[in-house]
Length: 110
Image (cartoon, rainbow, N blue to C red):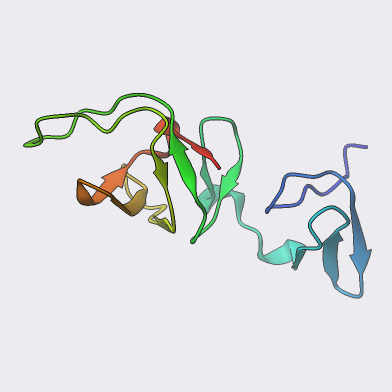
């Protein structure tokens, strides 16, 4: 089963071809496998592929310059934007901190 195509949304291996698209039988996500570029993919700490608009959870306390307290582990961040060309490859807004950039290695998909 090395030729199985994994769903980029839910990471399910139960996918099937339909016309020129692939369809996930678990989340019903449809995508064109030729458009998926794994080099530009942003991956969380568990290996899940992140997409714009996803929600993530911070997995460890992150110190913030100029702030009296860190972003605590377990903080949920909604509606992220990805910047795959940057070191801090997630742009987001966190309640109590405002706009900031995070590294994908310190978050997991919610």
